Image (cartoon, rainbow, N blue to C red; front, side, top):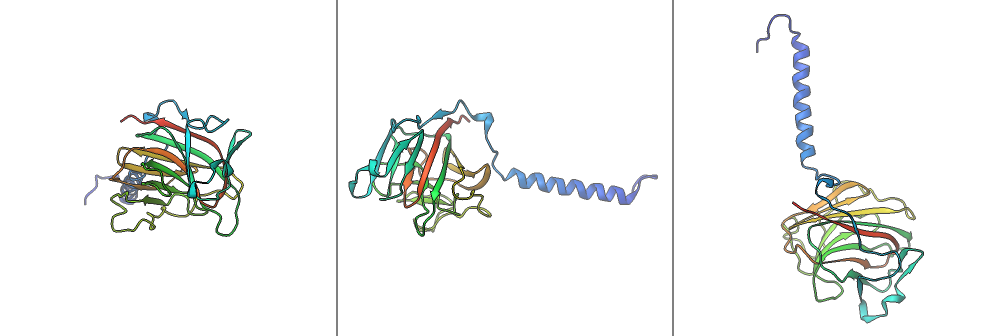
Length: 232
């Protein structure tokens, strides 16, 4: 390669390498979903009114009284985690950005589990067909395809094998509030935990349904649940 007189070849080479590195970084960043997708969000709509369970219904193992597990005090939902089951919206949703602000009240051995459920299908049962964003302590962001739901990344896996979160856990310490955000757009689900992209799955066989929270051992509190419709 020839350079015009007066040009410093070493500087030009360094500049060229820098351009290549920048291009590589941009290409890598292009593979990370945008957060948050504010260009396509409308006004956030609360699912929890801060007072009671209006807009929700329950499904609990052995048809136990859900109000022995779920309660609302001082604007916060409390779930004891026992027995297993869930609360879910009475309305079905598609194409939205979901935000859940929640925390573990305490952690006990084998009592550290919950999850955000999207695209929940009828009939109600423990557990329904849906996509679960794992809420288990240190595993927030694993994705489960439950009760026959399927996706491109889950093919060949059984229902108890998750699509593992990418990288290390970004969960906050027990007692601090976590923010679980889930983008559901057509047949694509993306998971963000505390503002960090952690997982996604594509070509899901379900793309709409109810929204729910699991009771699965974890003693948790939820202070906010809201969604933003997405338009593309």
